[in-house]
Figure 1 (cartoon, rainbow, N blue to C red):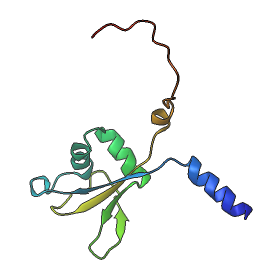
Figure 2 (figure 1 turned 60 degrees about the vertical axis):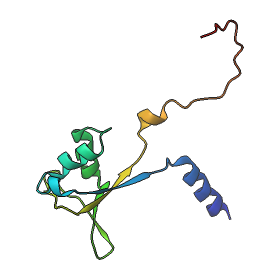
Figure 3 (figure 1 turned 180 degrees about the horizontal axis):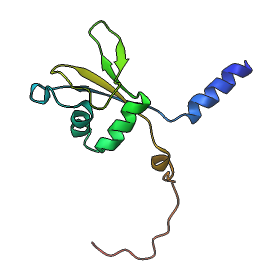
Amino acid sequence: MAVDAATDLVDELEPAVEWREIVIPVHLHGERVDRVLSQRLTEFSRSFVQQLIGQGAIELLVPAGGSVPTLKPATRVKAGQVFRVALKPTPQSQAFVPQAMALRVVYEDEH
């Protein structure tokens, strides 16, 4: 019983992982995986994508139903390949959490 409570607490404390699947289009066939994924994940830099690859957070889905980690940023992609990216919240993104608070409006103009 205590183990279940501890597991529930850990689940609440761990940030949720956002999963994204990226299908490689024909016009990007033969390009480097880090370059292609940084183009598809426009909010992230190429160096951040390289870090994700190094952490094993980017996997290549295989037709047999499994996945293999992307080993190197210089790996060349093929049209139709599907990559799954695990995006975990960074400490910086979790540092500031909005809080509800009561505010008393002293003056409000008509605009």
